[in-house]
Structures are given as C-alpha cells and as structure tokens.
Image 1 (cartoon, rainbow, N blue to C red):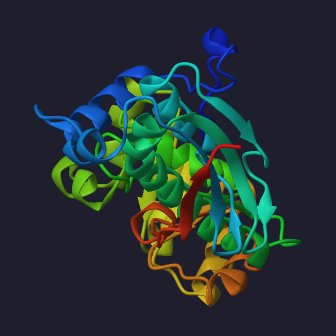
Image 2 (image 1 turned 180 degrees about the horizontal axis):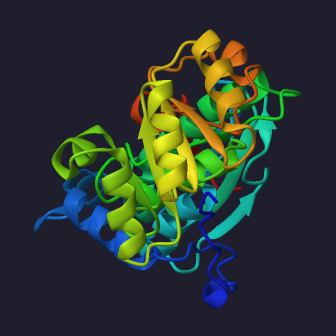
Length: 295
C-alpha cells in the first residue's frame, strides 16, 4: 500500500512536525543561505533595532493552504517573542484575498524572515492547490491519486506533505519502502519474472512492477508481484489490463497523465493514479506579506 508521512508528536508545542523531517535544521539552513556572513544588511541599515511592525500574510490566488506552520517557524527563529495568529488551517481551500496569518514582532526579524517564509508557503500551497484540482477531477470514480518521487532534492517530505494537504495519498517515500521494478531493472535482470523472483528471494514484501504491455501481466503476477504499475497506457488498454488483473493486486496508471486526461483514466477501474506533475510542475501560489505600523 502507499505510504503516508506520519506526524511527529515530539513537537506538539509547536503544533507541527513531520516524521523524518528536521524542521529546526531546515529553518536554520534556509536562513543561513539567505543571510550569508554579513546578515540582512538592508534591514540592519534601514530599520531601527527596536522597531516593531504588525503584518498580514494573505493569498492573492484561490488556493489550498500548506506550509503556514513552517512560515511561523522562520519568524520564531529570529524573534522567539513574535505574536502569530494563524487565520486558516492547513489543507483549507480559501478564496483569493483571504488573510492567512497575522503577526506582530521585531520589524527587523520579520523583514529578514519574510522571503524564506513566503517561498515555502508559496511552493507548498502551489503543490497542494494543483493536487486538489486533480483530486476534484476524479471524484466518484473510486480511484486514488498518488504522488511520486519526482521531488526537489531535500524537499521530498515537505512536498509530499503538500500533496497530502491537497487530498492525494503518498506513494513511496524513497527507494527503501518498496521495490519498484521498472523497464531498466527488467532489461538487466533478463525479464519481468526473473526480476520479481529475485525481489521475492531478497525478502521484499511490497513488489511493484511496471508493465507497458498486457503480455507482461501474467508473468509478473505468477512470480509474485503485489502491485502493477500500468505505464503509459491509453484508457482502452488500461481497461483491458484491469480486466486481466481481475482484482488480484492493486493497479496503478502512470505516465504523462494531465488534468484533462485523468478522468477518463480513473474511469477505467484502476486502483491508483500516480502523477509526477503534482510536485514537478506546480506553479507557486501568489501569497504576500504586508506590514503596517503596530497600534
């Protein structure tokens, strides 16, 4: 079965954490990249050290929200006493013009953290929003939308969190949580059946096999495949493949799937549909942060 990212309850005081993701390290590294050795020379020169500002983060687009707790962590890293009020929840679908977060604290700290915070929320909300549009398109078909490993290096846990906020189910987190035998594995191993046999012999429980023709289905199943990835098949071919499998294992449609084609694919009866575009091609959401003098 697909893998869900577990929430890490060790940081419940912060209200957010993800298993396998070090939020503190991410925030530190991101800020260090932006600050360099000299720090924020603009804010240091222009803003008095004791200046305070209130600010409002809002969305200029209709979006599905993802990443506000991470944005909060950026501001708190530079001003532990900042006052933050999240006005919407993670995974909420909001209209353009919606206020997302109100904050009040050190003006220098907020201006220094602003870009790192916004970059993260824009990217993750963009992924969540695109994902939701795909989920919406297949409602009622019984198919489940999956993400893929096509993520930016170092950001996989965050990006897969964002797809989950958009309503998808997480597929493999990495190379370690299931075998996925693809065409190059088959070519080197000498055939589908031999590749599956070797995976079983290694004691692997979850064996996903990519097939691009229906004549590979029976050899894969006979050898012990537990999940079939039906690669780059059009809807008529998918229907035939699903019929051949006959419910013996889950089926997954994959390859070149777009918003305009996913409904027809879902209606073939496949169990899952995996879409790399969710993380590869999602446009950033238009989200801003406007500051005003504290009252």
